[in-house]
Length: 556
Image (cartoon, rainbow, N blue to C red; front, top):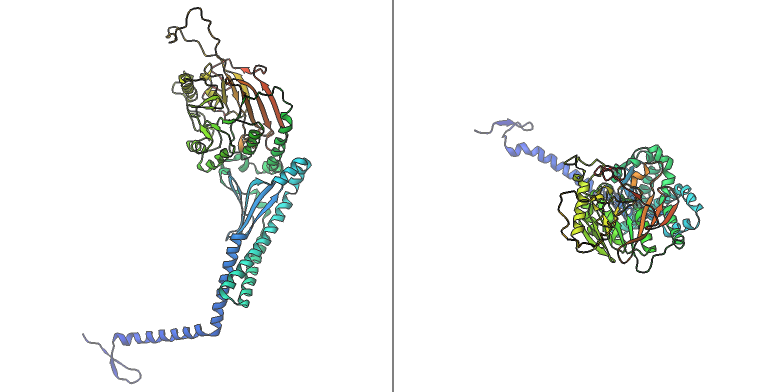
């Protein structure tokens, strides 16, 4: 098949229709376009445009780098130190980090600037000033808004200076031309100043009442729920940490007036329980450990709220106490939390095991259930036999372990007091928590063996007087964390409670100091010395009902 001839419009001569003839118009057009682009690229205006584009790119890079690295400031807000920083952002807004609880996100302004605030540390000098002048606490709350406003202005000026300086430095290294360096600085000034102006012009003060929560705060109905109630009490809650520091300072003047000072061979153990993720608890515990020369701290569980992996960092404070920390798991503590506690260099986790600290042997077992959502314990396998409930079964396991030990055990640790009845007559002292209410009682004596049961394997010579049954005292500690965030749900905040226990060389409890600090927003501190035998603990007579709770049924 041959190419068909065609008529040339210029000459009329016929030429074969080849592929080269078909592409030649396209090639000629491409060549013309390429030439035009080349001439335009070599034009002096195009050269200037490339230079200004490079200056703009370098200036924006300097703005971003300078803002990210240097736009940070440590701002005093009342007794606190707030770490504030600015970073480029498309959406804008404000993020407030409250470790370890999570963060709040506020749609406070439009982009391109994002403000981040990290709360969690105290300014030592400002705190001491508040302690010296009690009226300064209320004044600090009133000046908090001014502190924040002044801090944001200071941070904005720092961000503006950092952006300009970094843009100038970067352009000087690249261009080595005074005009281009000055142009980069001017662009940085316009971009950063314009961004700050846009943020200031679009501020929405009402956004603070509509925050978005992340982390553990989403599980805090006291914070996420009634916004009006929180607004009414915000000033009272904001001063909590400062007032606690002030309260603890009063302990030093109080302890010298207490009667019955323990002797030099006394072992001092601090009993804490139910911290429930309250970060302020650690400061109070550290102060008491140092002031009372504590030998060890025992924790009867519920150190966190939900048992999540995000909460494991909370227990890192244990390593800073400087004394052994003996812990049993609570019903809010997962196995991950227990493992995190065990990783602390001074921590000892007891789970149907025992340890000896300063001559006092302590046995303990963790809560058998994990119920962070406060659900009730599942029904017992045999509803007619309350001894088959998981709580009583765990208490029975610990009692068996203590009986099988070849040494005297002075203290048993459980989380829920409903686990304590099987320990009656087995150990002289049981420590518990869970109820968020301090109680002292004597466990009912164990029932005698039923008729027909085997006699004691150890024969008792005739005429030997029968030793009196061992009396078991139960000390239920209140919440050392003020019940955590749930402590804010009540009209009267839950107080922070802990006790210092004094043991003699025979592992006998001789006295204990009850320490109570006012809950969130309150400024009172109370201490009471209790001498064992002089106080009157309430006896518990009905073994089927303990502290008003049927054994095995959750109350908190």
